[in-house]
Image 1 (cartoon, rainbow, N blue to C red):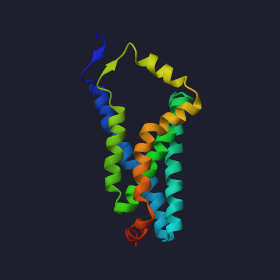
Image 2: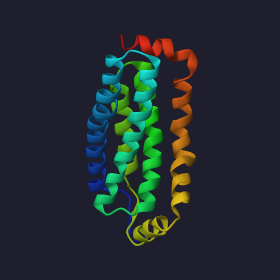
Image 3: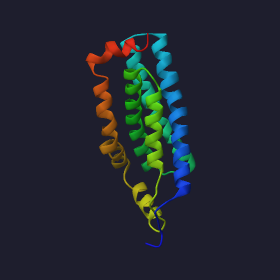
Length: 173
């Protein structure tokens, strides 16, 4: 209990900074540039679907960058799978609403909340990270998909259902 912190100001400010950076920069790149360019270039459902897939996969794969900061492969793979599902959700939201602003806000909140750790037990934090890193890759993929990935994947597919494509295309005229 001596190692337990209730308020972690450095984690809070890191989370806010990360939330703003990720929300703005990653959304402008992954949704604003890729999807908007595809929709302006060729205004068809096929073009939009290709942009959805490309944007989501690129967004997920960019999270392999975590390896460069010393992250282990297993947790990184889990993050890539989770980020791909989140990317699909963000692009579906962007297409349905026709504005990148809700994506920026929601993305920033998700990253900020995931980064903030107000209760840090410094004695066991590294033990938990090490145990997670030693899980098999297939387990890491499943952990990235269930439950978090499905939380984003199911609503994304619902937003991109067949009956909504006329409205989606109208948002980008």
